[in-house]
Image 1: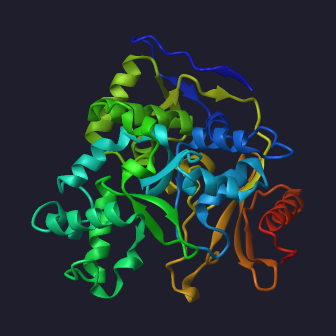
Image 2 (image 1 turned 60 degrees about the vertical axis):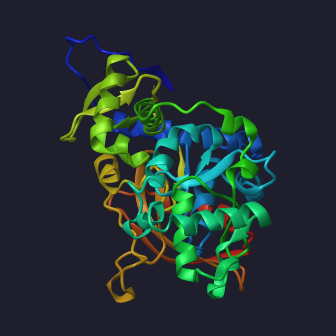
Amino acid sequence: MSGRFVSATPMSAPQKISLKTARRIALAAQGFGTARPAVVNGRHLGRTIDRLSLHQIDSVNVLVRAHYLPAFSRLGPYDRTLLDRAAWGPTGKRRLFEYWAHEASLLPFELHPLLRWRMEKAERGEIGWKSLRALAAERRKEADAIVERIRAEGPLAGSDFENGRGQGGWWGWGEAKQALEWLFWAGLITTVTRKASFERVYDIPERAFPRATLALPTPSPAEAKRSLIDRSARTLGIATATDLRDYFRLDPESSRAAIAELLEAGVLVPVTVEGWRAPAFVHRDALRPRRITAAALLAPFDPLVWERSRTERLFGFRYRIEIYTPAHKRVHGYYVLPFLLDERLVARVDLKADRKNSRLLVRQVTWEPDAPSDAGDRLDAELRLMAGWLELEAVDQ
């Protein structure tokens, strides 16, 4: 890798970047292009977590739960209990918490202060699903009662309120679930662990978070959003304003203000990218590799591809998840992973873990027209690697 970006002077025109260079910047920022470690340890995983800032959570388990996949894509096979302990282990061992970021996500504790403004807005009933906002006002007493029950009894799951009979007996399952979701949005409870079914188990932050995290100062909303845009830019490498605010789901107005301040400070460097209509920005610390060598299967919720318009702009690859598409209307399959090969996305691979028969099922592979001649062999190697990581005995194609 070579070169970092230097801020332009106020009078100079934005630097022109080729699409090929933009891809390399983006891939390097996301952790691709470096050799995978022979044995993955907690430090490797920690660096990946810090680089990506968040791992999106999704409940679909047809292959493996989505939050495990980004680290595999970048590091290769690793012990998934490392991530479990970081997310849901004993308080003294954890380094991640659950909250709404891009979507439901696992985030490093140091991001907690940067999202407190969102928690405060949720507590005031200003954001979150409309069906939950009444809990900030006329239903607040109901929510407070649930917090007090968790405080008194210890960690509880939604199923502990089933059959409409919590302590006091005056909320039903639907009402309790709504209250738990709102309390989670508002940061008044948090996920402390997950059951085998992946159901959340909630506790109060005072018991769930390290004291050092709770003691971190709370920045102003503007300062927090500026820090989040900075993180987005570091993680993406090169991005439009829309890309930057999408990473943590920030609003356009405050994002524009944050971007302007980061531009003035020289943290962001304005560029134009070949074929992109919108102006773009490169983080001043972004690397400009001469080439990227990589092979990786990417989760549908991997930050490299989750913003579908950016995926098209970077790779000329139109990607849509078809989980919710009726089977007879699917084009590429149910749970389709893009296959990254060096600097291109060259295939869509529909995968399923058949745990009963210990097989990784390759239901369909759809190749891009310009896939290189060695793409099939390199995909086969990655599939075998994934099967071993998932403790499956064979790959069935």
